Length: 420
Image (cartoon, rainbow, N blue to C red):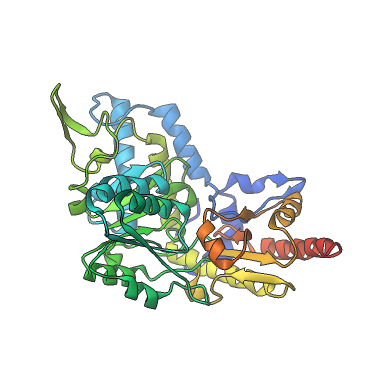
């Protein structure tokens, strides 16, 4: 494990960092793996893999209300992971941290509990056109069910959220704003603190989807003043099958349970049942023990690197890639070019070349990028493009990988252009 670094050390130590990620040693189609699909999922460091293995080999047991040693060790590790995440997000208490399966379940939890109790006919819900389906469909369907009104904030010509339109949409009818902190397609970083401030002026609540931004920039829920914030563990070096829902405690304790079962009750009788207080109220059944422990270790790893250090290095990588992509004839980048307004996700298309064809050829060269609508079909409809290619960078990627990617991309484009 690397030691805590100064600002420039990720760039100079990236080869050491890469040793922490076993999968980066493999080859694909006889070529060294170049993994540029980090917005879909990140790779996992050995520390996460090893601790999850250690849980199963040394202290595998169910958690809470157990008297034996294994159960006590498992319970301690599980709750320590919750504490780590609370500190990482600057929550007031670990009681504000709920473990879910992923960000999708976190959003659904809020929609099915708070949403169905509080959204009424003619109420208004505001989302943006750049939302991932997870933070779009829930509110679309809730609005239809409750006969509420779904309003969608557009983007500007520079691929930023249209804040002027957003302010005009807000009214006394607004009950919820659900917004991504960073687009998984455009890379656009949204001003969530300002959005929360404007939202609260009208007495409405705000939910922030931080799945893309959580590892690239500081996530401070108290500074944001968001009512809920969600992210998924597998995008921040943690395992799949674990997500996080942060909620202000005063709101959480008024929300009904999402699922019923063991662990979320205080008493059960033939006539009725009573619920635990949060977070246990929302974690019915045997929880995601190994996954939560793994996520806690991933948070340790990210803290060890430093989120600000990660952001600085990824800015350099992204700027370097964008500059070279813009040199390719017929290539369009969808997203801001100003690095202060974007993250390390770059969606693009090349005139006359189908993304799937290009993606297949790049895969043969060992390069993994994403092809499709990236669970953001409304945004692609807005952009008037069916599918895009997406290269998303992470702190273990290198400038040399970008050079190889650009060279391979140019060669591939030349091959296809012969048939145009």
